[in-house]
Amino acid sequence: MSKEIEEGLEVKLDFTKLKKVADTGSNVVPAVAQDVDTGEVLIIGYANELALKTALEEKMATFWSTSRNELWIKGKTSGDFLELVEARVNCEQNSLLYRVRLAGAGSCHTKGKDGKARLGCYYRRINEDGSLSFVENME
Image (cartoon, rainbow, N blue to C red; front, side, top):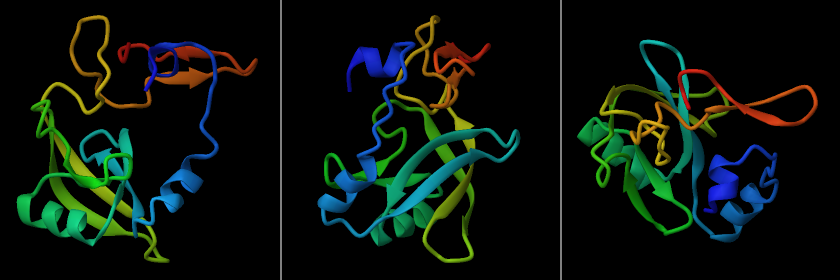
């Protein structure tokens, strides 16, 4: 991922993401991680049957990395785990909600000005004029 996409203030949404996921041939559903205490949406990924089974067994948010085609236990590399409090499914059973508690500095792989992982991945706001700005306390 480029620094301009991750840190820049120009909107460059990847509207082809779902097609790219579909093209991997992986059988996955979207999985959203939400802070159980604050309600903040921290991250969205994808889960297959193995990821869900692992999440429930390990009590840690687990995804299937569609770019690396492998199991991804959030925090295994960074140490910023997301403790799984509960997993929920939507009415159509085509997406998951992981209700989690942070067990580290944050959940995003990008870093704030302090050099620590950002709390969540949604740290920029789209303004009315279409520009981006950083959300306070998440920079």
